Image (tube, rainbow, N blue to C red; front, side):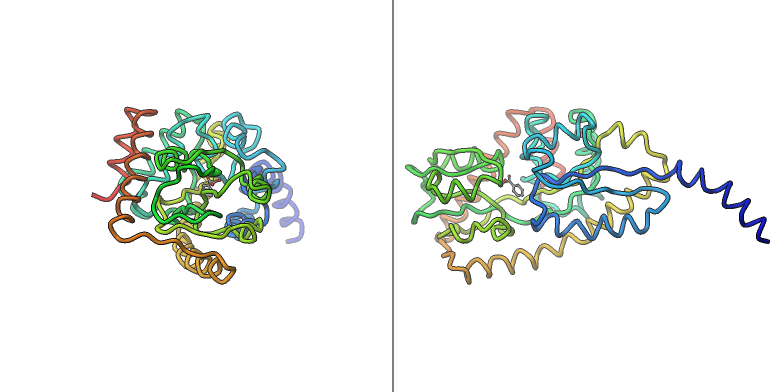
Length: 317
Ligand code: 173
């Protein structure tokens, strides 16, 4: 018996070792962010279930790879996978920022072919495999330190990324792009009068201390994803890819957790002293219509073929 067990172990061990692949993960957001907090239990569980098959090694946040270089690092294989949003890699493919305009939850996008289309596009243009989208509904807001009573940002300087650029400019703002890591200092020094950001997460880097107003309603639907270098993806065995795909669906199955996080953060902002600026119903509608119109116009201009297809597959009819 003993001899048999030993022989079996000797035969099995080299295979088990050869099978296990460790993937290096970087986050474009800070290590203490709501995003890393949400995804960390996922890779921990994955590492438990994936012993002998796939492991994920979390390298760190933007100190490891600067925010706007994370996409390129995945494209070139400097890292294997990243937790990132499309706005941070429009330098690689302009379509990356179009995912903020989707109106269907991932459960629908998996069913109706949207994810497949998106993934093919990411394969071809970004050398990336779009593994999972783990935020699919959280709105963005305009946060300000100067009061406005209508959607007119003339004379205001607002911190942006590609998510907000065209919309805030259309409302008359002067804009300045920064990585999240630079927002606090920009607010503190009065270099900007406000910033764009989702409803959640302003507490991560202490911005609530420097934020007087939040403008409602929120607009668009934030996209956070896990992308994988395509060559790395193709080098995996079928069993490894199947395992990761199953894990991706498990991560997306938690997407509705954000609805509560978003509601809690909105309340917490108000408790921290952030006042909400609201417009009347007609103005709110015009504000949202403008955001959408400006957003799709930019996507169509940058991507005349894929833009219309993306809108058809991902928006409410
Ligand atoms: O940095 C940003 O404001 C940004 O573009 C973004 C996008 C998605 C989630 C969080 C931030």
